[in-house]
Image (cartoon, rainbow over the protein chains, first blue to last red):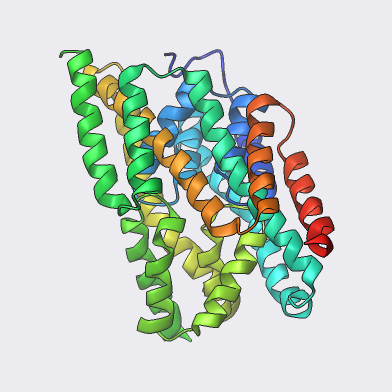
Length: 184
Length: 176
């Protein structure tokens, strides 16, 4: 694992533009797009580093993508980097969503519009699923990590248990298992 | 007006601190606050607002911004957005600093090992939950699965798959 590798430096304007793109592309939520732009396209982080940020972002309160933006911004440029990432990510979506609210009333009854929205939403769901599977493939979890992935998935998606207690218990169990593997 | 802004700020700043797992998980509670507790909009208007926010690009948190906009215009949008983001972002900032400072520490290494699979499992679950909400026929299920496969096996921009999904569902509208 390489952290704060000095050979990779990302400027404030690059951060702003990267997250501006993430915000603009982010149909169905920006999670998958954060990975696409940061890992695949610009190679600011590896899949492993991104998964760590995502994992931390998910157990903290708040939208996990804004948490990821805070982590990425601070890592490369400190507090100003955080602001650059957050402003970049929110700017265009806010303009677009208010414009949509203004025109929506006029087009909501057209069946093609609703079919198009549904199709885009279905693809967005597949995007989240595919991104998770791709990260699992790239990270190659060991048997213990596979177990944690499977239990978390089953508890939330199959059994429909409430998320907060599941996350708390799962994190504690995962920490216990990780300690067994790396005795302090 | 000022009263509504204060209430928006208070409501969403509090929700920000309990939103573990993100905004989608929090939606039922947001709906309860906005419709039942504060009476800012009807259930139908809330569903309408959520549909618009889903159709726009950007983080899911913009649904909160749009609620602010519907309640109190531009000041409402700004207040709601800042309220839902600031507490959780400050906490994330502190956490990022702590993880960075003690990155060589064994405890942090263990924490990292533990968080990665938890995050991956939840992301898988959220993909499936989104599919359940949206996919009500074979065409939409096929669109979701094809998009997932595209992301896994191609490095191309996923926007291609989103565009294809949109067009496919419009075209098949009349042959169902």
